[in-house]
Length: 330
Ligand code: NAI
Image 1 (cartoon, rainbow, N blue to C red):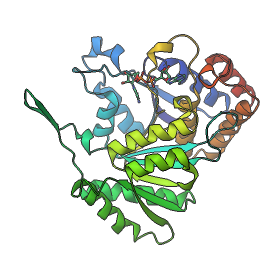
Image 2 (cartoon, helix red, strand yellow):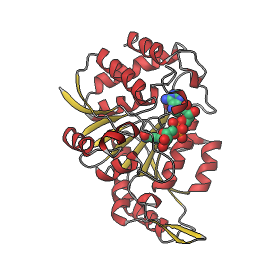
Image 3 (cartoon, rainbow, N blue to C red):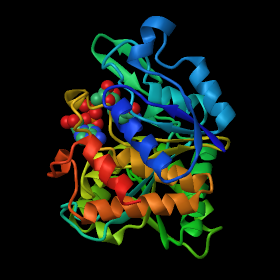
Image 4 (cartoon, rainbow, N blue to C red):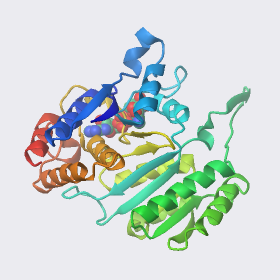
């Protein structure tokens, strides 16, 4: 039996994790969930939103499913998500963005894989107040981190039958940092003759994505552009309720939706569990449970095709009803 860490998060986290755990259970796959609480709710008792026990659990089990966790804005604790990625060296953020049936979007046939570098760039957390008038954040790009993220993107492309990996930078302006990212990409690309290379500037990419997203296949980006562009791509396929994600490292992987803890709808039985469910389906593929992954995905697709959705997508299903219908379609 698989033992998997489950971080059920806060806000809508517990509602959507309950939904996903019950769908997986109903599929017949037995998972021994190692439940680990984290976030704002544990600070009072444990003095930190990310206790060591959570990291240790993921290190031991190697795989985690994570619901969203609230990060208070401004000073105080560092984001649990950023810290987790750093501690476990989860260097690749993978966000597949593909249209789902019956979800109204501007374009059909979108099928883009966003591969975002997850450990450096402006997210390295190197900031200082220079003087009263000036604050400074330093952008770090290294050859090693770029090399491994580009390899990850090309390997993903090869394994998943994709045709092109496009490198996204602003190397015309940040000639050294983005220049290094682009140079390193070019070197890695030469080792994958069967995958078409492509280069684009991030501003042009944004315009092209909202005009003709079907021209893109796999995108590889430094951290900040990756963060912004993956949300843009989430918008192309119906928004946060359906946008899945994964943070993958050499030794472990954490699967989580793109959206946050949605405190505005907490406890109202309104949250859409689809993004967490799609993340869990990807996780099942990662641990080799392809058959269960397909079965759950087919049940979700049938549910959507039959016109059942939650209210964020214009439907009228509650979280619990939507979950029930998916289970009945397994
Ligand atoms: P958010 O993603 O939580 O919510 C934005 C809007 O989308 C809200 O109107 C919300 O109701 C809606 N929404 C999000 N997920 C939904 C779902 N599954 N079903 C239906 N509606 C959904 O973003 P926001 O409000 O900026 O952040 C709230 C908190 O979440 C913050 O503390 C933030 O730091 C944290 N956060 C955590 C993440 C994580 O744990 N990976 C990622 C992003 C934000």
